[in-house]
Length: 298
Image 1 (cartoon, rainbow, N blue to C red):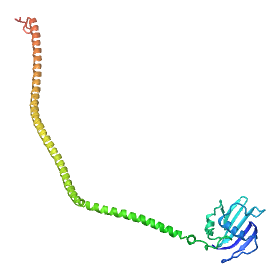
Image 2 (cartoon, helix red, strand yellow; image 1 turned 120 degrees about the vertical axis):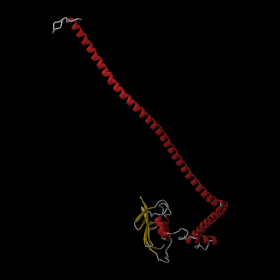
Image 3 (tube, rainbow, N blue to C red; image 1 turned 180 degrees about the vertical axis):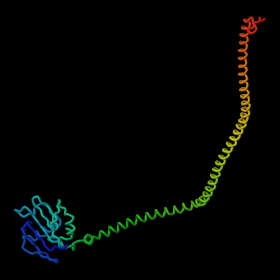
């Protein structure tokens, strides 16, 4: 982070102060109570949004504003009646409590213990123990990432070793199981042979069923043939009987005709007898011959 310019408005003794900073070292000098430390406090307030409240507001003023040009971007912190916000190149961001918006933190990338030192603080890191210096160095270059990475790697390595051991045990167990199941291959060939024999047996059974059906059909045909033969014999007998019946019927018709003729003859005979009676009656009444007038003897 490089701060090239700073503008302070209504912050403690500074009503309107502009400071241009060198890219290397900037020294601020002046008598006591003219606002040298206030410049540092204003920059801290911009970077960390602390302290909270309005105790550093210039007397008689209603708002306070601190802006800085950082790496070509303009950051502004403003607080007043109804306004409490940050700005990054005129883009407004709400300031909540003592938190710094993430976009502002991404531009600044500062730490209150590393990037700032108060007036009465001991020389930077010279009064610290080796362990504390190592800790501070770790925080500067973020060596903790390496420690965390190594820790994660060791954790994953242990997990991988455990999984590898478990997998090896399972592999050994599987190999032993494979050796125990060597008979499966032989059983597979035997099963194939049994299946082949079973298929042949099922085919023979199907053929047997088909043959049995054919035999039953043949037997039925034979029975039908015998029945048909019996019926043919019965038919022949009936035909012979029918022929005899036909002869009898013919004779019956002839006899009927004769009977009718006899009846006619009897009727004619009766008529003749009746005529004979009438003739006799008439002859009995005739006493003499009409031709010769001779008496007729009875």
